[in-house]
Amino acid sequence: MEKEQTIILQDGEKTGKPMDLFFIWFAANIGILGIVYGAIIVNYQLSFFQSILVAFLGPLSFALVGYASLSGRDSGAPTFVLSRVAFGFKGNFIPALVGWFGQVGWLSVNVTTGTLVLLSIFNEFGLNTNTPLKIVAWLIFAGLVLVSVSFSQQTLVKAQAFFTYVFGGLTILVLAFLIPNTDWNLLFSMKSGSWISGFLPALMFVIIGTGLTWTKAASDYSRYQSRKNSSRSIIFNVTAGAFIPLFLIIGTGILLASKVDGLASAENPVTLIGSVLPGWMTIIYLLAALGGLTPMCFIGLKSSRLILASFNLNVKDSTAISIHAVLITIIPLYVLIVSNNFMGNFQTFLSYLGIGLAAWIAIYLVDYIFLRRHIGYSNRLLEDPAYNPINRGGVVSWILGVGSALTLMNFIEASYYIPITLLISGGCYYTSIQTEIKDTSEVKYESV
Image (cartoon, rainbow, N blue to C red):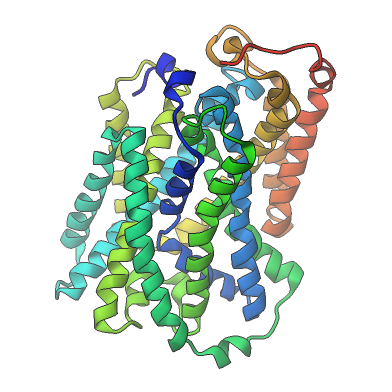
C-alpha cells in the first residue's frame, strides 16, 4: 500500500491534464450494467420519453464527481484523506469505512458481472455453465483485475484511453445494430407513468448507481491535475466523460427492454441480452461488455486501496492486495454459486450504499465550497492524528442524515429519503461551521 507521506502529491508530481479525466471516467462507465439500468427504468412503468429523460438526467449526477474533483486538484490528496478535515482524523473512519465497503462491494459486483460475461462467451463456444466453469471464469477475470494493482497513474490513463476507443467503439457498433431493429411502435405506445412514484424513484436509482456512487473516488484521480488547470475544464471533462457512455448504454437498455422480457431481474442478464442478437453480433457484444467492465474494476481496486490507506494503518502492500483478493473471492462466488440472485442483491446493496454516501458527500462538498475553496487545506488537519481527532460537527451531521434516512426507508420512496439525507447532513454541517465561515477572510492555509 502507498505510504501516508506519498499519497499526498507535491506540485512537481501533478502533471495531469483535464482530458486525462475524460478518458478515466469514460472507460469506467462503458460497463454492461448500464443496459440493465435501462431495463430497470422501464420496469417503473414509464413511457419512452420519461425513460429517456431518466437516462439523460441521471448520469448528469457526475457533475457531483466533477465538482468534488476540484478538491483533489487543490490539495494533491485522495478523497478520504481530504475527508479528514470535515470529520476529524478518527471521525473520518466512519464514512471511510462506508466508502471502502461500497468500493469493495462495487468491485465485487463488477467481478461478478465480468464472470457472467466470460461464462456467456464460453457458452457461445459450446461449453455449458456449471459450478466448475463458474470458478474458472471467476479466476480468469479476478486475476486480470488484481494484475492492475501494479499500474501507475500514467499507465492507467493510457489503459483507459485504449478501452475508451476500442470497447467504446464496439458498444456503439452494437447500438447501431439495435436502433433500426427496435420495435419503435411498442416503445412509443408505452403509457406515461407517475412522475412522483415512478419517474423520481427511477431517477434516484440511476443517480445512486452512477454519479453518487463514484463521488468517493473523485479526488483519487484529480489529485494528479496541475493547480493551473481550470475548474470549468475539470468539471466538464469528468461529467462529459461519464455522461456520454452512460446515456448511450442506458438508452440501449431501454431499447432492449422492448425485446427482452425479464431483463431487469434476470440471474444472468448478459446471456439474456446476447440471445436477441444475431450470432455474429453476439461475440462483438460480449467482447464490448468484457472490455467495458475491466477498466471499471481497475480504478475501483485502486480507489479501494487508497481508502484503506486513509485509515493510517501500517499495512504492507501485499497484505492490502490479499485482503481485496479474499473479498472479491468470497462475495462474487457467493452470488454466483450460493445465492443465484444477482440483481436482487445488487439493488439492495445500492439502496444502503446510497444513504451513507449521500450524507458523506453533502458534508464533504459543503466543507469544500464554504471553507477549503477559500482557505485551502491545512497540513495538520490532513496528516496529524492528534490534531482534530474528531470533528463533532461532521460526525454528528453524518449520523443525523443517515439515521433519518434509515428511519424513513420504511415509510417513503427512495426518491425522497436520499434528497432528505443530503439536506439534513449538509444543512447540519453548514450550521456547525458558521464561525469558521465568518473567519475565512482572515485565515489562509499554506496549500499542501
